[in-house]
Image (cartoon, rainbow, N blue to C red; front, side, top):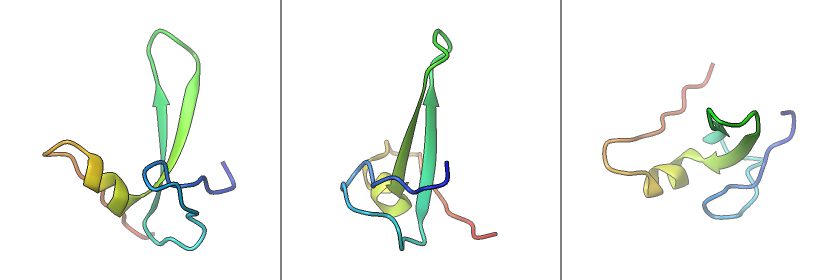
Length: 58
């Protein structure tokens, strides 16, 4: 995916975000996939305790 998606948590643009993450969702019973974009900090604010997204710049 070449263009950034809006943050699925706040709904704002992610164009200049250093903590942008792209998430692919799929289910074993279906070939369909869903892509979500997010600011990692916003995603961390809604994840269950014990889960955390870390961004490592390459």
